[in-house]
Image (cartoon, rainbow, N blue to C red; front, side, top):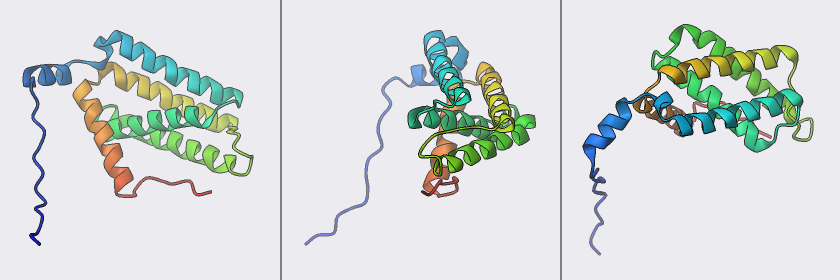
Length: 155
């Protein structure tokens, strides 16, 4: 039997100029997408502050903090990287504690203020971030997860 080749052809982008222009435009110029994303994020944070957050809302919050951290690595608000790491650590503690509280996500006051600060930083980053930079940030997050560099909550 003949050996199979590992070669797979790459996809072809049909409209390269649209791709380039879209990547260079600011995220805040896509107003309807930006507002929808912002409302989902704020709704999830509000549920966490009330102690009513579900797993889906916690996933949204984790995504926000991860994107903020990745954007800091791309020098978008890099001076706030310690505060974002603090928010990430606080969120990790909340999620770890939820394993002992039958899946309820309850924050202490200090943890909640740290997570809220992380959200404020994320909002400020999105005001100046381009769609291309956001794509790069998502690639950084995906590579970290694949390389098993992300903190996993075992339970």
